[in-house]
Image (cartoon, rainbow, N blue to C red; front, side, top):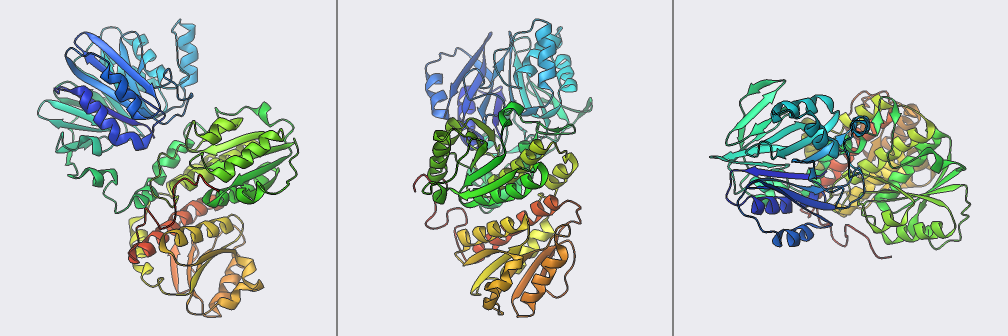
Length: 589
């Protein structure tokens, strides 16, 4: 989720690069950097941390006649947030910025090392510029194309070189990149916002498109030159940041497809799950796992329990961090202690991590923010790669937490569910017709005396999460319940003013869950069923894909419950992004 900018042929490229990176800092703020062509010189300035650190360094640099440049704000994937690992990465005469993951970088790096090529970073990106210079024989575009033919994975790439200083080379596959033109001024960015005020229209690059710019755009697809398809840019920066959506939460729900692709890149492979962050020796002697988390992260942990116990046959206990820290728990050294946090600063979770460390347990963090307190404290970390989440009610962070736990379960159990994981990502693309149906349905779910979300197995934690989303932003009372537990008390509340959202899986306990729904319908509860199997008796029904893996059903239902909560809240006139009494990062007890 890094941010990229670039420009050529403008009066003050440094200003555009810095201002553009400010608009993209939400995509990553571990480090930032720019590379500028200044007469015959290629100047590279980088800094760790927030963009203001780069700004201060740039103020101290004297530029003579800068005419082009590229910039990057980083969300670390390979290598820690250091200046050496920050972009742009340089060779002897070139520099590159890159968003995405080069899956085969290690084999390329090994080959180049044998050829005497030196590397200074831990990143996958550095192989792009080193491979480019290795192939350069007088024709920069030819060398650039050879690089593109060799690298696998996802990327948005900008490359500049002193060998052909009046050009910027670009390519896009799986990561966003936009090119815009204003007379002979040409601009690049990862999203609309940096371009507004500089150009009125832009070409949104499609996967497989590449080329170079000088004072024109030379665009190719499969070695055939094509004409850019310019579209108008939004006129409002804030609207552009939201991508035309009404709320950041809505944008983040729609982003989950791209975010999950980024989360699984280089990890979910045809040969099984690979985590660069982990090694098998770390898990020697581990017989149990404790997962500690709060709120949405706790619900993700509950999903992880089902998956790890099913796939890896390791006992898992999931603990509410605010309870665990004040108990006197049994912490034995054959236990792996896992903490889950979007921000990495969740106070209760952090304290349980310190408690586990003090007891001598091995610790692992699943976190979205590198260099956060939890990441610094844990022995090992798997980064979620969700990007910044502005909506207080978590959506894409939850999606990446669950996906990471699913991959982790496969990693521990040596299982390969490559196709199922990719299918699960695919169903998170929001279906416009389903969203429209949810908008219409939402008007009948506003005035009851509360909601029950029900499900079994992995769909029970999803019911908890669906209820949490609804109450966070709509302020309507909602509970998640195991479907089989309704008859042990809660069904006493059933009447037409009780709203029930039933998560009915075709693949797990279908008949039993269906019976639980029938029990509620018989008592006049107003029921919305989400399933691939049509249930005639219920008041409302949302059909999902007919999938053979329950996790594919899980991710599609997840999107629907998120949209339902949002649409109910919008109808009630609430501020979806900033619900009352809540904060994004809970750094207090």
